[in-house]
Image (cartoon, rainbow, N blue to C red):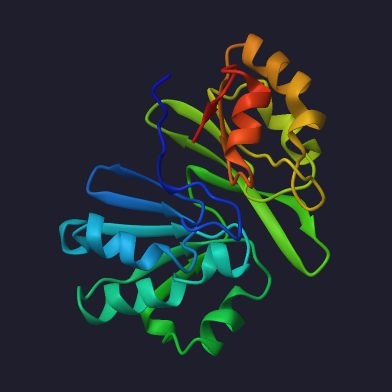
Length: 216
């Protein structure tokens, strides 16, 4: 399988490489989540001056998904003279960026674009969380973000070319691999490529799926 999204990291919240993906298209960089380990990876891997547009999708405000957001915006604005577009449905994201000392002139905040639709899901009771549908490069992509349920994504899945899904060994605020395995097999049999991400125990999950799906 040749996945559309590339990953800077795919660890769960206490891992060393925060779950974060990206795609480069037509002089645009789209970054998906930017936890506290991501700023250094962005600086090391991308020349932000080379892009006409920089977009960052934020699924929720846990530190392993938004911990570098302000830093990347400030770097793009102060060093590269670029205004970042932040795409998110999170209720308090403007307030969050204000607390981090991020000037409003440094970013534009939108809840969707022509090709990105946010999908509200459930993760923890302490904050709102989203996945999204992305239509890009002729592909229909579903990305769950952190979620403890697959139900909000069911209306979108039949037409999906690629599914990026949060799975775990332990369950709780994430989807337990045992609980979703048979459903994922069914989705794959209908032609959707499946990539597992935000994994708390990669060896356990890899052994359990036995090559059926790809780890992001």
